[in-house]
Image (cartoon, rainbow over all chains, first blue to last red; front, side, top):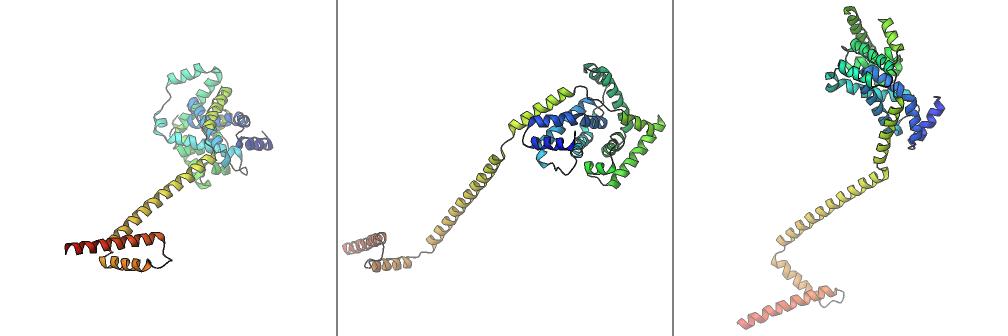
Length: 181
Length: 124
């Protein structure tokens, strides 16, 4: 979506135009789903995060500063939601059993894609299981979403030094894990 | 490790039922919009609420203040002052500038003094 169309849709959405907001949702939901899935490694949790993100976007749209990139702003909202979920005890205790995974795959309309998603989730989960929530967020944004450090600074609110140190520690932990495998 | 990370970044998780998810989001937003209160109403509520609290405060303050002054006047009005007031009243009764109410009060006071005098004469 080109910036002028996006700005027009944002302006219309600020005036409670739900049709315009629907177009924003259609455009950005896959991006947010990808981020949430890579962080949470669970399809249902990722979909819930997408919903919560867009509800927050709708509520706080008046506070959006058009000078900043819209995708960065929306990424920041989604990242904060993921961070809260990663920190919550409920999420840490929740471990996807094989039964749940099979049920998720079978209930999906596109079984092939669902299998790919599930496998991807298992690999990312295994690799990042020993990372702290902050390390996981920074690692996902940098290496899986391939964002620049400056953008990660804007999304997370962390300093570039802290981001680099978190990335270093995350890489070390993952390398150690791969050596064992 | 870099090869693995590269492969993972290239494999993007795909949202299988995107249309359904959009529909759910829009339904939730519709509900939120219906429940959203107009900003003017919130402002009116805040202002009237504050005004009500201030009025109650002022009323209580006045009540407490008047009670205090009433108590102090009760304690600080000895009989000598009353006599003085009576004498002033008696003087005022002849002046045309005094109000009707004041004149009437003085008249009553005069009567009561005369009654007392008659009583003492009767007793004697």
